[in-house]
Image (tube, rainbow, N blue to C red):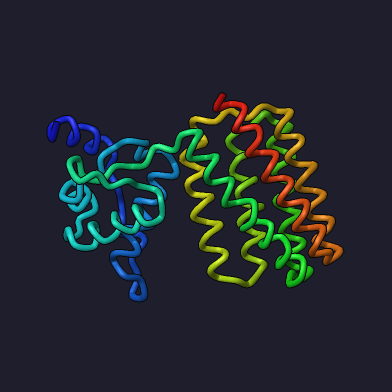
Length: 232
């Protein structure tokens, strides 16, 4: 098993040096490097996160790698098994259903606060994301659609000016990214998603916080219902 694990890791040379700066802790740089590798799929679901091997790949000591890996576990991107060590988490349909149960109230609040606090510059940023999402649908770019979808939701959270809410939304979004490879999304669902995003944005532009929250909760609930049908 160690030889197999090493073969998996050798083909994936990780680089942390470019992330380092005088104001950045090594553990933070290691964490961001590993997070990006997981979200991009270069570190795939189920793959072991060997601290010694990652430390060698990144040319750092084991201590910051160990701390970064534990943070990935805390963020739901990796799973710790007492006998097998830590591996990139596999997000199944049941996991996605649980994620959406949390997303509905959390992102409903996000839409409400965004409508109350957003400024014209923020509204412009949301419009730009929605425009990019439309292009992705027109070009049948499923991954691009998914990424702009997450960007829209994360931007809403950013414009709430609530740091803790942003962290929760980002964590849930990261777990969704892992699950992307196991969940299909057809063009009809994408077009419905854009229309629902446009309605949410219109409520936000009018600073109608109650409608923005209601539309967002409905939007998330519909996605959860579609996922539930796939699970049966």
